[in-house]
Image (cartoon, rainbow, N blue to C red; front, top):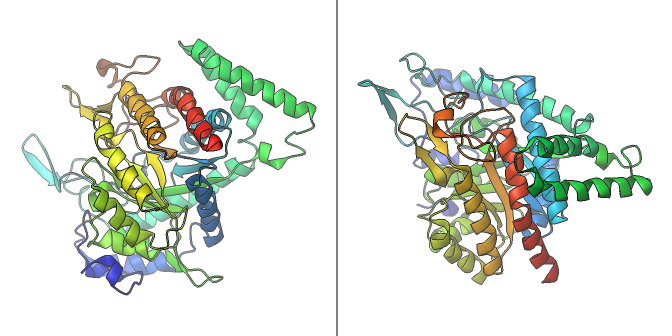
Length: 458
């Protein structure tokens, strides 16, 4: 039985095998939590979701760019206004650089306000001979390596909901309350360039942006006359891994009568849970949100087409984003065949690159890390391959933070493996820090400019 051949409902996924789901011990408690979540207000609204789909439709047509980024896994313990603000700021900083370089709108989608569940490679974790259930994100169990902490607790879904609501409230205030003012963001970028060891690389772009802002002011285009200079639009996303939670927040829109997952504007399926005859594809196919699917190096062209058939049978631009996560040493061997097949069949998808997951390594001292140069290399290849195939590289997807962490090696400040222990805060995967994110924006801006030039000339 495949997902696309069954009648869909918000709970029809329960008839299918479900990967990466916790083994809750108290099913009555789980059902009580699900009922409570269903009574809560939606976290986002259907019209916001439709707005994002329109933006992504433009990206799919080559008239925009998708910037998606945020924490690998949000934490209840590390939930503070400064942390949310700093990640919001660095997303804006990167967006300004990419907007100017690409001369196109950048749709900003944060991995925030819901990224609380994480897939794991194994069901158990062993330390010093002791095996305990793996930590699967704060929405499921705790990170402490104790038997009690690792027991899946349904009540954590309630906590995740309230944390997501508070985060969304703050993000909306930042986006509309002046923090996103174009002149402020530009000043942050100027400060970054001035203090960067490689500032000569980036100074030209900053100078051009400054000239453009002065020209706009002469023309009378200011924050007072044009609100878009003073505010911005930010959407949220997460991997919709924990299906009982996602089902409980799926609602029927009163205007259209269509089902939307109101836990986030965009949700995606991970590489480990994209099986066509399994629960996640079944659940996602009935939603009217923009959807993403992570594609690793083992993805075949037939797999990509089958996923499009299941998740975007109407071939609607903006409905489906393929997020490739293959690694700098594997991308060139696997991505071209996917692009060629999708193009040959006239299918509409947004192509986005996740240069993080395929470049994860473990150091001798036990830290998971990613090398900045490998991340840049995968992104540059992503743009080059799409250009060579006559396709459009439409987005990037990053695990990142506004904090001054030392989790990924390399970059202008040359973080080494011996530096990782200084400020390694991630509970799951290593993230780019604020300086590395902005540096990455400047480094890939030329690739984006070339991709945009190809679009405008075609």
